[in-house]
Image 1: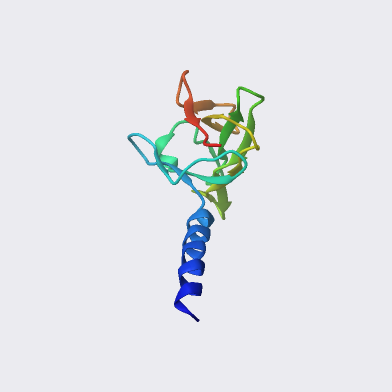
Image 2: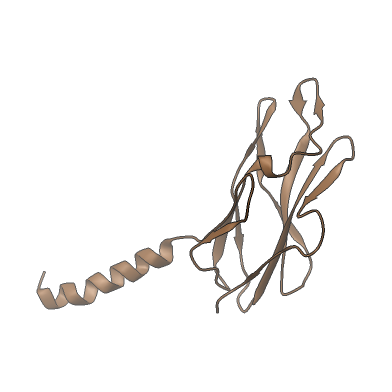
Length: 138
C-alpha cells in the first residue's frame, strides 16, 4: 500500500474505531456515576449499575431472589421507559448492562433506578428528585 493511501486510510480507520466505542454510564456501589465516551443523540449507550447501590426491597421466596432493578429513563422530559439491569441465574439475581438508544434530535436524558420485590416494596435511586440528568451531543 502506498504511503499516500495509508495517510488517507489510517485516519478513517481510527475515526471508525472511536465511533464504534459505545459510551458507558457506570453507577458504582457508592459515590458518583461516571460517563465514559460521549453521549450523542441518535446513538446507543450502555448503563452499568452495581446492585449494591440499591440494597432495599430484596424479598426472597424459598431462597430465590424475587426482586428486580430497572433503569427508568426519558428523553427531553417525555414519557418514562424502562430496561432491566438485573437478570437471574438459578436462585440469584445479578447485574446486567442495559443498552439504550437515544432518539435522533434528543437533547436531554433523565434516569433513575427502581427496585421492587414480590412483597410490594419499592425503592428508588436517587431516592428523591432531582434524578440523574445528562446532556446529549448532537
